[in-house]
Image (cartoon, rainbow, N blue to C red; front, side, top):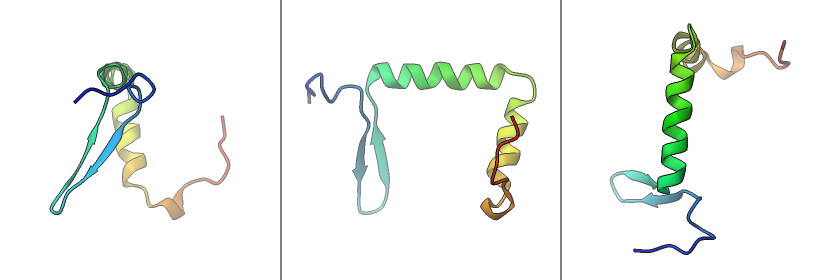
Length: 66
């Protein structure tokens, strides 16, 4: 399958009866991989992300303190 250029940077959700998938363009998937590698290279970032994912949304701050 070939997608035209207006759709090549978007993701496509594929819904099946027993599972779902996402189709990403090559450019997008490489960009996401690089960003992930960068974030994981920052000291303490992996643990911070895991802690944030485990925290219930009700316990999250309403205002950012940057």
